[in-house]
Length: 548
Image (cartoon, rainbow, N blue to C red; front, side, top):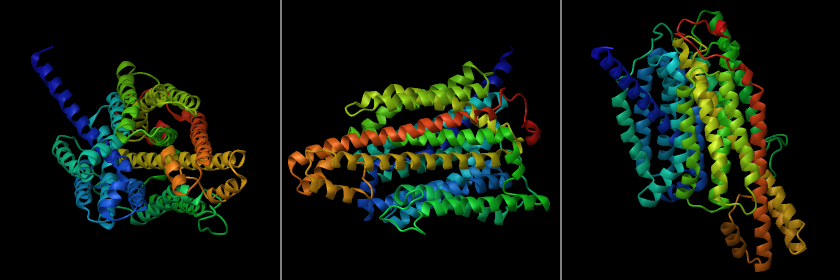
């Protein structure tokens, strides 16, 4: 091989590495905001003169804006160019980060964090999926998508660590100022990326956009409020419609509007127009399979990232820094699997790797279920998180390439929008399901433990049962003891209640993990939709229905 050929190959490798670094940095940044401020909510609320509920509202709205605009963001990228959509999204996101860092009150925080950053992410994330397809050949895409997924998972795991460190040693505002600097670097590097063809003849389907935003918005908002409102039967302390929770009505209405959206898109296609999403894409078995597995992956991933940090930070009362360190094995294992599987087994069956990934996640969940006991310590999560991380990494190494290879390259932006919609829906449902199951079982277990304990006076047990029936918060022993002492509960009764609370916490965690294990088993039933063989060659001219 001549020196000139070698130098060309090195230059191409360096260029590909630069593109991958740029896109992975963007993926990391977009995901970071979903977890970085969770440990600092009290400090942020105090600085802005608001409440914890206000900050939780801002976090909820950020997720809501992202989830509802992903499909539209993917289509905009196909109309103006993926690289331009990526750059505009970075500018909007960076502006939102700056506004958030300077926010004097909750309203400005919501404008910067929830709205501007959410809109920016909705433009960036679908473009990232399309830019991988446009800058990497099909054999190289599994590794690239695996690295992107790893960057996102590492952001979720390190978010509390970064947020806790910034708040402890400086200010929570420095997180958002740092994001502005990172966005500026990403913008500079993005000029080296190759773009994908632009659909210059098409226009944005405004009716479809409104229907998709309204439908997805109602559904996701209902899910996000489920822990407060209840899923079907309304909680006793919440308003309802005909005794049924608003979550149920919002989710049902959202699904109805999404159905109307698909009917409208079919009408646009029949008239020769350009739809937001082509309904015939959903008849593509491979695309459906990839989107379903993305949904299940992020549902399980979000549920685990909810349960394990809760166990470490509340049950064991570890600091935010210590909690982040204990979760890091998952991120490390994920990175190893996401990069190692395509490198060591480039021709491995995507279906087989996906099934192995699900089984590894299931094994990790079962290990957590059996390991978390009344008196277990933080070390109990290490091996289970390694298994879960390897499972997520195995899935991440395949699913991105599976979905994009199922359609022509020029539709990769729309696939990016659908893919990120599926992941947002999965993450929202995973957190909501794990949280509602945990709190429901926690409440029932604590009430039963207090009522059936002969050492707790009957009058105290009856009063506690009435007060706790509306729902029990997940409290550490220190928090529960402080509340009981403030209420003037005798020391001997306090000890019994604390023991009942500790057992109830474990019961709640076990119930949430059991639900996640069941969902992992269910997801195996849909893994047959994943193709048996790796995509080979250029898929740019593939017929999406023929691929199925």
